[in-house]
Length: 165
Image (spheres, rainbow, N blue to C red):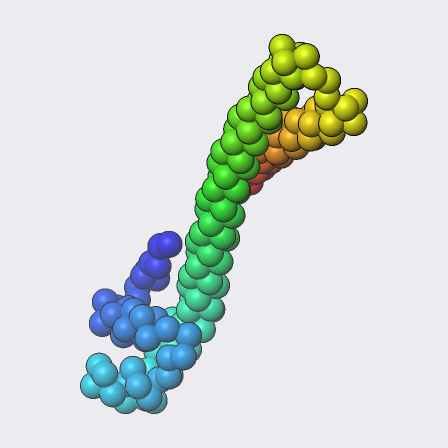
């Protein structure tokens, strides 16, 4: 953000303005006068002559806009990281749940084979319950994976929206 000297503005007057500017929004003529060794009356006269009020207001506004933009970017980055962590966690859970469901299916098949080779039969309700559990686990695995993919789509949309700003 540029802060220029007005043509014909003496360097000493501009220097006083810069010191006053750098004191921030809570600046006072009394504090600046004490710091630079000039009277408060002189500073008020310089401020009037060289339009310090409008120049400082524009500067302060630009600084606030810059700070707000940086805060918004930081919040976006924080949310992006949280979404990525959530996505990765959901993806890992989906993989674990899918592997568990596959083990359950293998167990059901193995149990049925063992019962058949031993000549004993399982009750239809037992087979249905085991297959139902495996199917629900596979379905949950798919839903969890879809949630993780949904986060990827959301991330792409956020990146696209940020690029258009």
